Image (cartoon, rainbow, N blue to C red; front, side, top):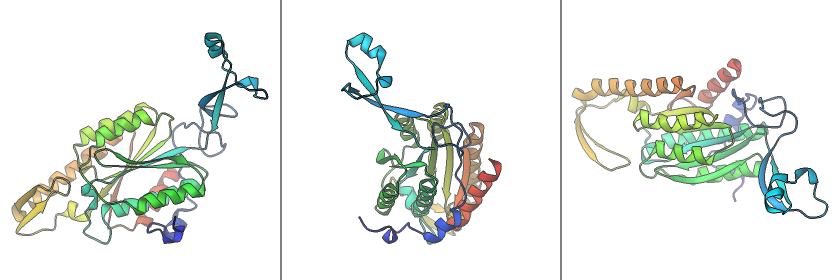
Length: 299
């Protein structure tokens, strides 16, 4: 595995900008490290992992007495120590994320954000995981909180390329069933899908008591539509083509895009989901610093 400095998304300047800004959970999380995040537990807290059969020397305090009564066999409960917070970075790698009118595509911009938040969470002793998806889950790195895992995340980010169509709602529903312990869900996507369908999946996370942050990737050309005369557009996911007279359609398109973004923002607000617009012509360090600083001040 190459050293950190060789990763495309290892940006010391960006990391230094946000290093002292905590990513604090606003909701109750299941953790044991005191002082940063609120926990629903009292005292020492651990998460059940699996059973093993009793052997001499095992602590009998962890015997599953109910299982003993049913099976007449002695099993010990094994536990996995919990960290401050478990966070999952959900990254959309569908074809539309490959669009970029400036220096960075939406996917590259999101990768820099994921690298920075992974660094920040690892630094504050939280566990961070990475999930990439298009029309299905592509990569699933379970949350951990050690430096080697941060390097593993960078390695996955370095190898990403935009792929095919996306199905946000289905993916979110699948992950909601898979991620059972409450924590922080951070989504990076351009949400070029029906906002109502996408939100159904996000609401599933909220019903499971996760805190959810939505980072909406927006290329300025998608918003401003700075095109003239007859232009042929190609769908980056379906490869369908459409010839458009942009002078006639420009105003209608811009109104439709603004309505789409406002609809997504409003639906998030109604379900206590934090919505953050990320225009890709804004420096990454500026965007993240502004959001994290605001979040820290609001508590």
